[in-house]
Image (tube, rainbow, N blue to C red):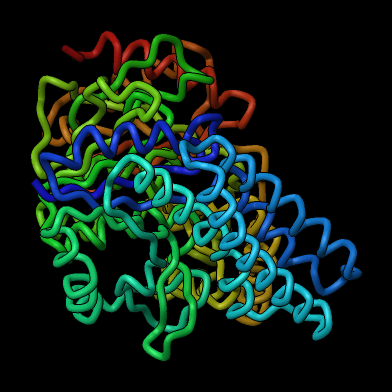
Amino acid sequence: MKLVMKFGGSLVGSPGGVKRIADIVTDYAPRNSVVVVVSALNNVTDVLLDAGENASNWYPNEIANTVEQLRKVHLRAVAETSLGLKEKDSLAKELGGMLTNLQTTLTGVSILGELSPRSRDMIVSYGERLAAPIVAAELQSRGVVSWSATGGASGIVTDNSFGEAAPDMVATRKELKKELLRPMTRGEVPVVTGFIARSKEGETTTLGRGGSDYTATIIGDAIGADEVWIWTDVDGIMTGDPRIVKRPAVVSQLSYAEAEELAFFGAKNMHPLALGPARLAGIPVRIKNGFRPSEKGTLITEGARRSDGVVKCVAVVKQVGLLTVSGESLQGKPGIAAKVFAALGSAKVNVLMISQSVSEASISMVVRRNALAAAESAVSSKLSEEKMAVSVDADQRVAVVAAVGAGMRGTRGVAAKVFGAVAARGINVRMIAQGSSELNISFVVDEQDADAAARALHELVVVKGGRS
């Protein structure tokens, strides 16, 4: 089998994490062709982002202190490997050269007094650049022929949208096959940096936060992988957030569509865009626990098993706000909704949910809380220009609760169970939305009621509502 194994930062950066990764890879590599994709060590990406944003105001000693902090973190990981003293010293020098380059880049930002999107991508890429050689070296110490390379050097080609670059899949497939397939047939295990790619001009780009998952499925598509395995720190995708609901269970199987819904609603196991390449290529994706590799985890495929329940998961999205536009002058006026959303688009505000009354007297939208003020200002200004007598109200004390499951499609009484469970707890629902796919029912409640709503939904609809 051809396998792509992606390891998240919580694994790479955990005590003994590099050895743990090598244990897993060496267990499968003799019988399979394996590509490893690694994230930055835990919290390193946040440190780099913070450094990039603040370097323009920092003095040289502040930059040096941040680089030294990163040096200690990575040398600690090197010290935990199985390498001999000579090999550890050589690896430390390699990482030291990268950190010197990082310090030079941050100093350049400090001198210029501004951070460009191009520079931000270069700075944040060092997290994965520093992690990959450590994993490759540990594999080498165990007799595995391994080497590390950035996603860009491996062949992932994107546009110039720094920070959220989009892959050119035609060029990427061609390059990845050339760079990875031949070494894999010789039994080599490439260790590829997640998240990082390159533009057609050769500049470093990134795929957005959580983009290591995306890297893994892009590679899986290009090399014709049999499966992509996402190794994380939980047993799989759960029926609910264990910090909120009681006795959440692992969902054994999800469809691509269900998993994409959950990724959108904030499930940490998958990047929202990552399932696209796997779905188009028909490659199964497994979510597995690197701390408990014997657990089966969650399998994501095209089909959805009814035995896993009508409603499979309950998700809660916080840090959102509710924007409501209302007034009699909205009624019977073609194009008003278009003007509202055009205003939001101009303000670069992404709308998460939409609901409009049949009377056309109000339109409600859910946006990220940090974009709520901009959304309110943009819509108010636009409708004022149109001389419309409407009110625009913003409420940041809300949250979204969602029930997700392909089994809801065509099943009678699901909505009654969902809202009956919530009503039984005395919780008021502020807004409801359900797409034509019937994969999820989403509703807005006061933030203080969100956890109670999720618990009620999980207990009465997921646990007692037909799970096997």
